[in-house]
Amino acid sequence: MSAQVWLVFCTACAILFALPSPIAFKVANYAAVRGKRTMIASVSGATLGVMTTFTAAAIVVAGASYVPASFLDVIQWAGIGWLMLFGLWTIATPAARESQAENDNLRARTLGAIFIDCFVLAALRLRYFAFFIAFLSQFINRSRDVVETLTQMQAATLVLSLLCLTLQATFARSTIAMVRRASVTKKVRNNRGTRFITGRAVSAGYRRIAA
Image 1 (tube, rainbow, N blue to C red):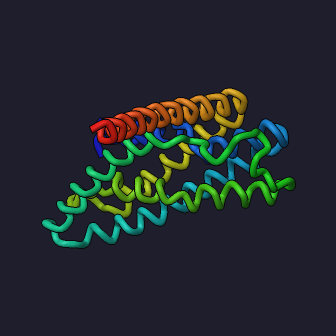
Image 2 (spheres, helix red, strand yellow; image 1 turned 60 degrees about the horizontal axis):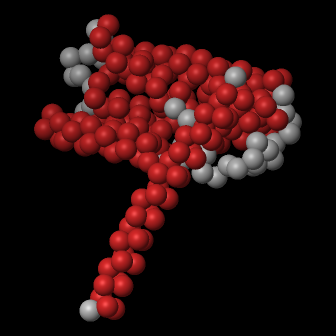
């Protein structure tokens, strides 16, 4: 691939992993509550989970490269539409809606249990799975070896996810504060919209009663 395409791919992946998310919140929580010594277990578990999701999506995309060209165009346009919805969904959904305190949902205490906990959370992140399918499908080019391209992307994704998760665990307090701030901001925005709609509905009801 060209340097411009690689730049787009790496930038999009870096933004994805840097966004406030339950994975970042979990890794940072373990570092803040259980100590920095858990970073190896939490970061490696989360990274392996992300790569498992990426590999599953890459297999789907590699299979899609053998479909007719017209059908492949439909897949790519559908992927673009889903990526737009993903952006709106990320903006509208609180990042840590299920987490209230720093020690919430931290059942694991041993390094092995922490590794499994972070792996399962990242591997079952269906939003990432759908993102990778939609995103990777944009890079399918029949003139190049699809498997080789996906392998190179997998290596780049491994480095970026490991780097971002390590930074989020290293600066655990800042990561937790960022996730909570994003979550609170979105909740306040949603509550304001709900109050506005409710107020309009009540006003309409009073007008009907008065009439």
